[in-house]
Amino acid sequence: MNVFTDKELKFSLFLIYILAESWKIAPSEVYHILNSTGIFDDYIISCYDTLHTLGSECLVEDITEFVRERGASV
Image (cartoon, rainbow, N blue to C red):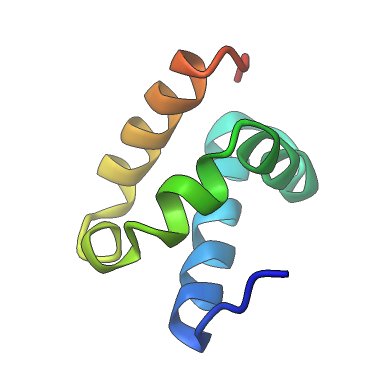
């Protein structure tokens, strides 16, 4: 079981909700996509120090592209 810092958890929730809005799907579906492709742990949490400095638009573009590279459709 992963243990997240408070900052990582808040950032992850923020990110899930902006992706849900952009992709026009439920936040739970966003989490499922990010988790099933490994992006949640391997990228969002592990690269938190860099990612949290980026703007919302950049984050959405970056993660959308990454999700598509991993074979998920959004």
